[in-house]
Image 1 (tube, one colour):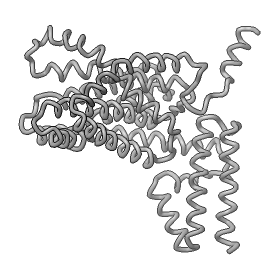
Image 2: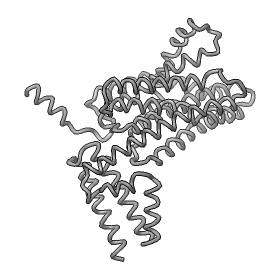
Image 3: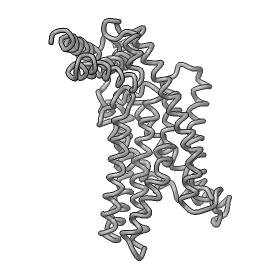
Image 4: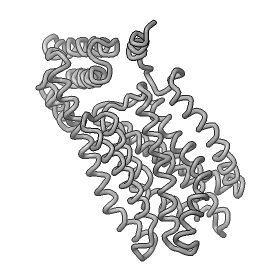
Length: 381
């Protein structure tokens, strides 16, 4: 086989349905890093649980529930597509195991380097040292997923989503370790767990690691999916990573005095502003991508531009179903909901794999079936 033919064969190789791709060196690198990192994380978790078993398992329960609720809410509220669960789990595990484990290895060295310049007694030491290690390690997870076609990072919003999940995994494990260890040394261990969880999970948790990594992930995804000039793509990717590190440093910094609660709340304002701006821009770009797919790629009898106007936001879809229910009853509303899900799946498949792919063909069949069921609900009953 000639070199050109070999390259063509590699290009036409079908992508895997998830990031688990045994033919990808990136996947096996992720596995290797996960093994090394797990050897660091497992002893820390075990030590934290056994230092005071009652408070340790209580901390594990509340932080585990926190991560499950947070991840489920973000997953279920996705605008266009619910990503494959295995990809979501992979992102969570990167943050919870790889980023935490590698930070445990690299963190002390960075602490020493920064401490040599700033002084070991500097109040800014952890504010500078921690972001320089933790944010790049979390960002590497988004880069790894972007390099594996099965992860299907196809829009800036995908990068923000996976970055947020990676940050959430990191936040849950770090929060558990910090909470369990602090409680083990306290007089009232159970009360300390509750107080630490409220402070780190509820008060500051909504603008912590998940927010930082979502900002960085959006910029990294822009680098991979945009057709902008290379200089602009590099600037956005590096700028978003720099912004994540700056926000992390700001949250950890002593720049705002007061109680821990008041300080965390005040610092959260600019962090949330940056996060919401990032998500807004990401969703606008994602909407434009799918609008073009509906206009150019997908035949109008499956998803027309007018159909996409209804599909473009969650409120419009909900309003259309409510109107259908008022006019034709609940069965018609349920059939419209099924049609909307099928059309969204078709748009995603057409954008990711093209209209001639088996995934798009399957989704097109579901659209046709759902449209027939809706017509029967309206006319045939």
